[in-house]
Image: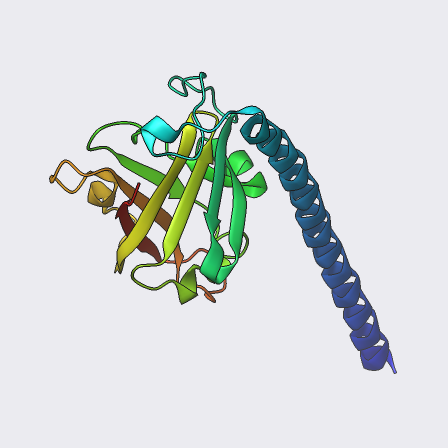
Length: 203
């Protein structure tokens, strides 16, 4: 009887612990979703207030530069229509930032930098989960208060976390975009590798 009682209490404790963990996860997801909606409304308001600029070949022209953004500031929006990714980008790649959005890696270029490589990171179990379906030639849009930029996917690869060379430009003078997330996508715990998407400017 005593063994059954201990087992029953242990099972109850496990259920409670599981419930608390699930509740915490749901809270984080709901909070992040609310943040995304709020920031998307803000950014779309900026986009809607801009006037078309036919001479530049871009959809919009903005007066505000983006250099020297503070950590956590609104960077823009990342959209990959074919696989359903649409997420806010904040400046920075710290834990707090990546809990709420994708993050622009501070040491990398801005979209307007000639020959620069813009690097964006996000969690594989949140905003970048659909990256497992990415394919060459997929369209990627980066919408910022400084302009709207289009990229086409060129390649994907898997690297070690220590391989920071993926943050460099390709040396051709083309503007590039690199997306970074953990790999494998369904790994439990801290994933041992990084999944890299490289795209080149198409605008």
